Image (cartoon, rainbow, N blue to C red; front, side, top):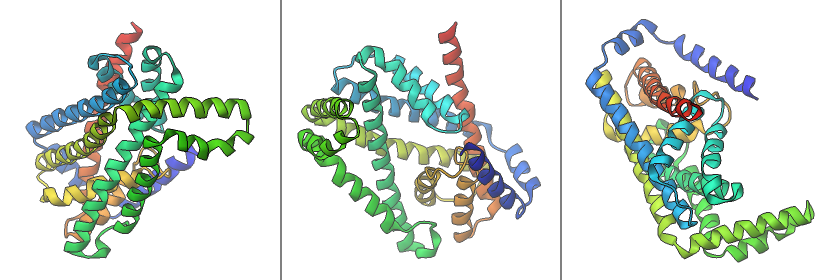
Length: 310
């Protein structure tokens, strides 16, 4: 699977670079504004801080007490693994490992990370659906690689599953009961632990609402990050266009067909940029420089990880 993802990413990048002037991209990167690039790094740090705050809310709802500073360091390490491993699972493993001891349960730590991921995805899909609908209203359907109706369907479907599960854990347990035929004792135990975890969330709904609101804030910070990179590269793209294409590109990158989104992300940016009259070179330059900054920032997670080992 990893080899197939590498092949897809390489083929997409080769195809895109065959249609552009690579020297123009290199020249644009060389003349980037260093103060704006530094601002982008600061905004990305704020993004990590907001993501840590969401995680802290969910852990507190489960009576798991950990200082935010430790969670921030854990998130940095997770971000490093997400950027330098061929999947995002490695980062989640770090977050689960770092909280399992305080939670006194690896299962509970994993459930919290799963809920955090789910609420974050719902916030992302909501922002993407709103942005896609606005883009279609302004430019027409052909401007986007995905229909807004699909995004709205995904958001409402996930809401229809998440809300009853959070507010009626016992009902979810009954729905999952037929799965016990696979392995009665083990599945029954997992269902029991899941319903207990969801029951604690139900007693503190503010944590779930705050986490979802935090997901929206995180997406706003990601758009602000790309806006800083746009200013650094002097690319004439508006904030409203970035509010459309950035969340959509993240949704498209979630398809398990590429290596950490490389190739797919650049193709998505190129598709949109050409529809609004901007050159493909600008799309690829923005995508690669933004990816480079996030990878550079994630090296701070490597420093945290090494300091732990020492």
